Image: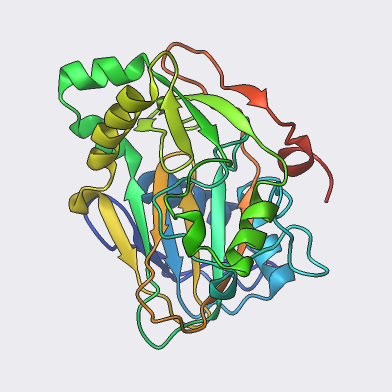
Amino acid sequence: MTTIATDRDVRRLTGRIGAEILGVDITRPLDAETVSFLRTALHERKALVFRNAPLDDDGQQRFAAHFGPLTTAHPTVAAVEGAPRVLPVDSERGVANQWHTDVTFVQAPPSATTLSSKVVPPYGGETLIANTGAAYRALPEPLRAFADTLWAVHTNDYDYAQPPEDEDDAVRERRAEFTSTTFETAHPVVRVHPETGERGLYIGGFAQRIVGLGKSESRDVLRLLQAYVTRPENVVRVAWEPDQVVVFDNRITQHYAVDNYDGLARRLHRVTVAGPVPVGVNGETSRAIRGDATHYSGGPA
């Protein structure tokens, strides 16, 4: 039976990003009007938090599917056994303590990401989520006009800023899996949101160079723009609890998993919603340079 939400509320977590959704039980099927309510809330607040929402893998996939067709778990990393659309985000497999937007190294990155808590450390382990639309609007006009013209190459195969001598066998094994197929894609630095028309900075950790610029100039430009994304007023800090679900709009956010829990166990499950090829302010679409990810973003599970 379909759940009809009553007493729904969108409780803001900060002024620019984030909201806790009250009065919607996402563990049950949702009616069309409630789905529309959640989609609108996601467009406006960019990141939504649901407490007391115990979802198993099937339930998380059913919930995520309200936002669109699902991707497979990841272009290169193994899925949860028996659940080819569910990616384990496990502290035992490393930490994602770098600002990024999910899977931007492929031509059609996911439109939304859902995370469901499975094992939560007693302290720390928060996820930071940034509003890249607010970052774009904060740029001085000359810098904004400059950013509108730029394209960046995103790749999954790059220098992770960890010296090889500091890597153990487990780290090398994870790196080998992550880069088992190399992907490179040129995306507009300013992406136009396909549903709202809002512009946002589309960069993050996988963006490694600016088309037409050298390595040093690219690094400087990306660092300058990224500093606007991560301004504290553009960021919400989500503290994890048992049975908590977070959804964020992957088209206009970045996120960062804080490594501040002393190596304790932390495990989330991730399900992502397929998205369109990004479009820049001049109407040009992203172009794949290397690697075919149709098995991830458009293929069967």
